[in-house]
Image (cartoon, rainbow, N blue to C red; front, side):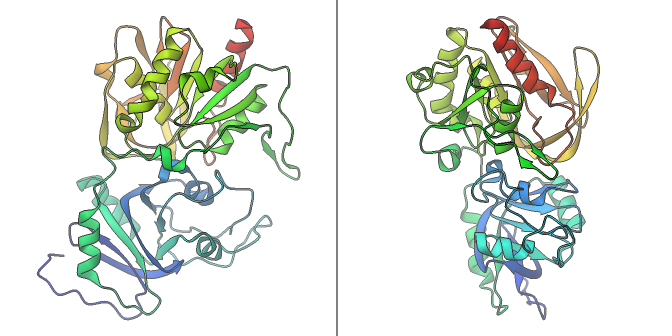
Length: 390
């Protein structure tokens, strides 16, 4: 709606999504009361809403879930990808219901409230998704006011004043503050996560945490690696102090060019000495920047658990989980970098490898969580590579 039109708060509305354009979408607030400002995006996954909300790559973002029934399996202490949720809030179609799953320990709305995150229900999420697809991911404020009182002009101004993700380094905000070891493996029904599963004789992988998901570490352990995590701002000397056999470059939020100001020099030094590298998502983008490629902001981004990707080596198609709003520009790849995976949705670069260094990366999330497991082989491929070099 235009700025000059009076905005009437519908009866019973306790939540709102206020966009920088001046458009206001009302609904029913749940979770924590309050406001949060960020980029509004959408995710098409049918499962894994708790993993999505705790994925550090969603820092600075408000997630619109296109699947209408979010919250119907409740929440538990196992289905989290970080200690805290990093998505600012979520927008859903239907009200959160009583959970119907034997693993649930509480309602999703209660979990959100306890985590200080805002939810908005009763929204036509298909219409909102179409708006994002046509106009790009907008800046917005999600608000939950149990009394139904909203200062809409102030909320619109708050949305307009937010600078947006382009040029924003968020890896520092979500990264670990100090190094630590990781030993847990994958989850199995009836047993939970495998504890102390790391192989003490396995290759040592140092994971640089730009906002990593725990299931990445579990997959590295399941592939046979010993894992040490270091902060995003770790120097080359900090990384090498752990005597890695290989280095993993993690996923994370924000603009890769901004994070690259301190991350790219470290990656370049690792490449110079021939350290094997494996990058995912932001780590993929940072590897691209380190070899001279360019990254750019996408119109709407890729977020979901059903993204088809073609492997260029043999034409095989993998169904993948994705969550990114920036991409490496294929045409900017240097001569020593080749595309290994291509998105079948829009032809964007989904993976690369260096022809003169032991380094490769993918734009998608092979650890899934949520999503398919078509690409778990990449962890085995990386750890096997390290074993051969030992």
